[in-house]
Image (cartoon, rainbow, N blue to C red; front, side, top):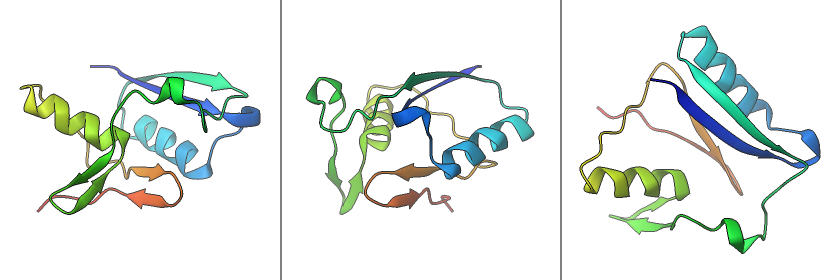
Length: 100
């Protein structure tokens, strides 16, 4: 399996945590491809508002978590490596919690 990682890079920049997560993928031998959109922030561009966000069972789900929830409900399997710490950056950095 090869993971496709796509991200905007406003001014050609990405967050340091993002870079660290890519290095963690590489260090753990997880194959990935990178697609970046240079000089694009996507902020305020409603044409990119593809996935819903919202509160489910008292917990806010951002676009990536909402998509996983929706795909899971459709019967797709979501594979996540707990070897890599995931931080979703929006207004704040949201660190993924490991399930018990």
